[in-house]
Length: 239
Image (cartoon, rainbow, N blue to C red; front, side):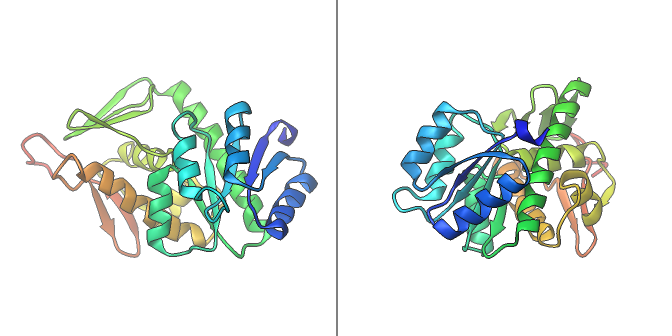
């Protein structure tokens, strides 16, 4: 039930904060609001939330720092709401620990779509955790599905939920080209056009984390089509 969902909105702009909180209230979501980073951190350390919205331009603490601090003790999905819309800012937010990015100005339909897709991902992830009891190995990559941990050359890499979901989807279809639409449907559910841009950003971030510990190219891009995980053998004979 939506009444069981708890959402935190961290936004110093009163008009934007009111828009989000009113939208959540009308749609029967429970929520708290915070106007500053310090007040947000107080709530985040005392209440367990299902989703957190955070603006990057807070008056006292930068939103990126809020994300980093929260990731020290929580894996709750974080959706950034910001007027910063270039890929560099998105990648910085994702690297800090954000899961999604909503660019201002936005409409309430898009906001609600993000909430629904995030909740679906949580449900899918929980179901997957119950079903998966194997370890995937491909070249230097090792994915322990039950513990949701990923290793590259025996080094554990820390992935955000979106990145992990994309990597596991590719791993379970290794050698197959997955179209943009297929990936978006599996990960985002009822996706929006803007999610294709987000997918590209996640792929860039995911590749960077993998290639930090391996020289192999595991994810192949098919321009205008999608992505494929390449099967890497120890001898590279079936690459």
